[in-house]
Every structure is written in structure tokens, then in C-alpha cells.
View 1 (tube, rainbow, N blue to C red):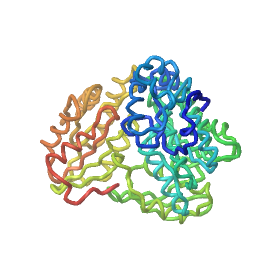
View 2: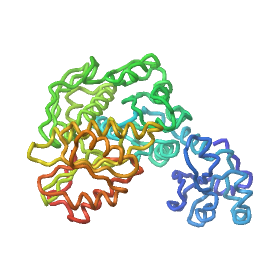
View 3: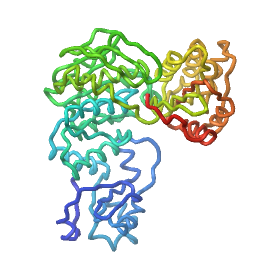
Length: 481
């Protein structure tokens, strides 16, 4: 870690440690606790103000941590309470950088293939699909917990290899939200053998300024791949295809609209949780009965299929795995309530393209007799054009055969305004997700199909919670789709 421990107890130096934590509340006996502070957050590409974890070091050590990694200057500031633990202190100039270097060295000791996935939308779903496909080969696959895809979540995932090095492959999503080379930093921890680029969309444009800068940031994944590796590129996104020139090895393309190595043909959408298509790969073709909905998820499936192909899987084997997947929670999860209405819970995150794609999925999967309700949360990090983007998105929704539109928080008022100006009759606005949940619970009725979607900070999952509170458990259970 490029750290120092001048007074470390020799008994501790001889301990074998396999568990590392950054949250003092999660400390168990035998852990090493990393005390993070604002300077590290700032230097490592994190936005916002964060608490100084040095004040929790004493509690972590009393809870059983064998040692703590701290900044020397922070130790000096807290010397009164930490002096008694000097023989359990490890000093680093940058605790986050030390944490990442430790993860890199654990990765080097493991030394097996890494599949890295990035994109403006769909990273977690594509990661889960790719991991599920590769598990069909009998291999043990490490993947990010939840969406731990940043400079802390990524090393936390990699450090699980210290306790269990028996994984054969790692499938890891890599995220970014600032111009501070976040993906490049992650690639230095685990250089990808397979680099998967999903899409480039105007997400986080508030911090990066232009779509071109977003593309450059995403391209760091291909730039950071291993020599002789594989770049998996979306042929339907011109900015992604342009990254082919950065590949240090071979390239596999996937897509629906444009010619690609891995494609889907004869796509049929018979209803929620019932999509079929013909998978075509360089090694052959096979039929897929796909339990997820929407063209965007077929694209995620094709990205996963390209990963499977890069590991030598046949089209039949890939299709079999794709036919047995489930949607990750809050990402297109279908919930059927006993009162006779259906909810598509896509409340994890949102952007204009993803929202319109899911509205299209809602409309295509519903019968003319079913009332279609969209609960759309404010979309964050859209910069100075946020109001205009929300209005134009509302205008687009107004043309898509939706019956009720509920906007949730902030700029979603512009979304509702745009739809109303286009002649949409039943539009409503809620100041927050709690109020939106109450509003929806008051109007939902048997036969309705509801889409709930919003940016992470809007917490539209509270809308689902309000429905469960009002109507109880789902009579038919939660059916992933």
C-alpha cells in the first residue's frame, strides 16, 4: 500500500487478514479498517463533502479491528484518543489510494480473467447477464455487490478475493460521473481482459459538459484493457463503435440496427416477461426465450452473449443461459398485485433515453384495454439544459399512448408541463416520492399497468413501498421481467 507502520505490534504484523472495511459500523473481529477523509475523496474523483472517518477509528479497534489505516495528519489531529492504539496504526498519505493499491495487489496474486463493463445505462443489468451466462460454463464468477462500481465499491469487490481466491472469472461494472479519470483508475486496479462498452448517453453531463467528453471518459475502459484482450462494442452507438481504434486486441461488435458480430433477429414481444428472439453469433444461431422486457435489455443480452462468445461458448449454451435470467431488483422487475394491477419497478435510475425506452416497453406490453400509468421521477445531472430536456421528454411521452403521467420532484414539473402542452390530459405532479406513492395508490385500479422510474436521488422506490403498504403483499408474487 506504500504505507508505513513504525510502531506496529509484531503479533499483528504476523496476522493473516482477509477482510477489509471502510464503514466502522461493519467492523468484525480480525478486520482492517480504512479511515477515509475529505482530502482522499477530493483527490480520487468523488463529488461532495464527506465525514472524516478518523473519528471512528477508536470505535472500530474496540469492535475487533486488528489495525486501522489512517493519514498521518489525521492521526495527529485525533492523537488524544488514538495514541493508545499507536501499535495498531498503519499510516498512508492517501488512504483511498492505499486501499486501491491493496486491491490491485490482491488481483495480481489471483491473476485470472476480468470482464469490465461500462456505459451510460444498463451496466448492472449487463453485468448480471454476463455473469449468469459465464456461470453456464461451470466457472465461479465474482461480480460487484449491488452496483459497487466506483473507486471504493470496486476495490471492495476485488478484495473479496483475499478471503476466497477460488473465483475463475470476475465480471465487474465500472462507473464514472466526473472528468477525473475514474474508469482509468479502476482499470489500473484490474486491467480488463474483456472490455464491454454499452452506450454513450447524456448522463452526468452536468459534470462533464458535453457528450464528447462523456464518450472520452467511457473510452478509458478500452484504453485500459490488456494487450491481446477483447473489446466488446455496441455497433448501434456511433461513439462506441469509434472506440474500435483504441482496442489493444480483437473486437466483437453487437447490435440490432447495424451489422454486427452478435445480433438479434425475429424479435417478438408477447407481453411482460415474454420476449423471444433469434440469437446470431459467429459460432452459430439459437432461439432465446428472454424473461426481460424492452429493446434496451435485448441489447444488454447481446453484450452478455458477446462476452460468452469471447470465452468460447456456443450460441446454444448462451441462449440457454439467457432464457433463465431474472431482472435485478428495481431494474425492470415486474410486480403483480392481487388487486389486479401490474407494476414495472424500474426505480433504480433514469435518464431520458432509458425513460422513453421503458415507456415504449410499457405501451408495447399492455393491451388497449389496460390503463397505462407512468410515474417518472426527476432526471438528475443533466446540467444547464435540464429543464429543456425534461420538457422534450414529456412531449415525447405525450405521443406514446400513455393514459396517466405523474411527475415526481424538481424538474419533473417540466416533464409534466411538456406533456400537458402537447395535449396530454391526465398529468399530475408530486413534490416528492412519498406524495407520488400516495397519489398513485389513490388512483390505481384493477387492470392498470404502471411504470415507476426515476433517478437514484429521487428515491422512487418509495412509490412501490407505498403501494405495498396500501395493498399488502402481491397475491401472485413478484415476477421478474
